[in-house]
Length: 306
Image (cartoon, rainbow, N blue to C red):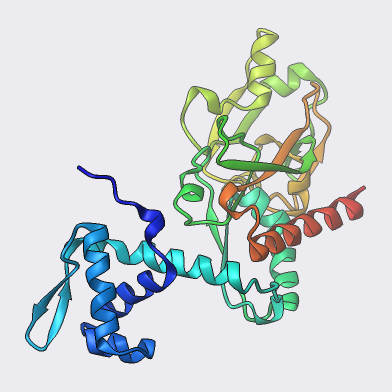
């Protein structure tokens, strides 16, 4: 099969194909372009030879697109929009932005970041919308399919040039308990004897908590009696119970608010949270603005809490 010289296509040719497809008429397309019908017919014949396809077939008083032209429409629209941005780059104006920004996170990142982010977004871009989705552990597929703009997560994506990761914040771990029911474990043995609750976002060997990995290295393990699907559920079950839970310290201002907390009887490395997005958005003015907005919220939180 002969290779098609795609570089012989130009913006006017693509616009011609788009208009004939949309209007179903060569004469209507000519009128929209401000040229006579013979000019359109001449250009259409050239495109038929170039693309090796009939392109449009007569049907009644109009024309219908071939399967090839039908399949080209999304790409044509994308290319023409890109050419317009190249010719007329516009600075991003948050005040006139009407798009929906979508963010995925679990309830830790959501409780810490999203309330402040929403208020800041509402002030700076009053016509924009914010949508949040539950992050499915290590699932980064929505970034590839453009279902979401960014993911906030402690997870690292697999090595790939397609995803960009930016550090947002670090947090330590605390031991949570309900002081109206029980005292804090005084030492490691009492910690190990306690009934533990945990959050588990997925079932896989790699989802083991940092505390369990550390205890296993010491030849110890804890007694898990409740596993929650998220931190909000964990807090609801812990209140009024004898349970203890090892969770990020900042949850004392979020889902675990109202519970007491103390230091762990064993040292754990801090946990790092990241903002991850697809590289195709690297130069998008509106996406850059949104990422900076998230970073400014986190920086303000860091300043308050340090």
